[in-house]
Amino acid sequence: MAGDDDARLAERVKEALAEPAGARLQSARVAGGVATLVLEVHGLDRLERDRLEIAVRDALRPLDEVREVRVAMTADKPRRQTIAVASGKGGVGKSTLAANLAIALNRLGRKVGLVDADIYGPSQPRLMANEGRRPEAHESKLVPVPSPYGVPLLSMGHLVEPGQAIAWRGPMTANAMGQLIDAEWGDADTLVIDMPPGTGDVQLTMMQRYKPDGAVIVSTPQDLALMDAARAIQMFEQGDVPIVGLVENMAGYLCPHCGEESEPFGQGGAEAAARSMNLPFLGRIPLDLTIRQDSDAGRPPAARDGTQGQPFAAVAQRVAEWLSAKA
Image (tube, rainbow, N blue to C red; front, top):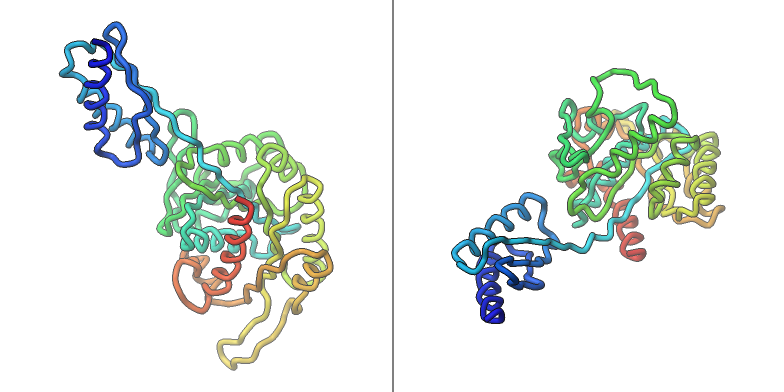
């Protein structure tokens, strides 16, 4: 009789699993009036899982032999890859590169989340056009704030008032960073982390607790910036974090009036540095007034096809190939 009950139970569960897709019955049994079900629900978010459990219970309610229903759900946690975007100093366009890289990777088919780990100078909410919105919390975890570009974001800029100074010591900053990284990222398979500039305690703590799969180093072509970039590279190498490659930002300026091209920060410095350190060179991002204006307005160039977005797309393609090779 128990075998018949199990068979009837399994059929009821299969009916309940018709919607939503993505769930699979692993086992079902009845003992002493208690139905115990194990469902594999990889790919379903929390709301879909709640709906599924309700549907299963409703489907089993007509069975007289079932007094209690116990539902267990299992899911293989997806392998989430993390890329840190870093620089040895501020003012080299690291945050702009991180935002556009995240968007460009998303357009390549990855499910990307963006972490603004620059606790003292959060700028990603402005870049990603979700400034002024606050994240919700679910079961003690922050839920990232959606953006118009398909890339959810978490930033201290979502948690403090605009313009408010964050005067925290190292441990508080590290704890805040942990909350941003350990958030409810759902099915994101890639996290892009906009690191704080420099090579201090916050950066070291991040590497120790949340070791990235790789690091993208951003520098301008000038020698002083490259010296600081070399320090950032050394920090990641000491932490056994692979360097994905270098990006040369603000590389050349094309005058919109006369069409003349100039090199206010020098030319080719990052590429030469990458070559000398035997590291990949990921590409150049020009010093472009439109990129600056669109970034300030929350319109990242990588979100659309066009001249300004092409350099970011090229960098993202190389990063995506690196991630696929390391998966």
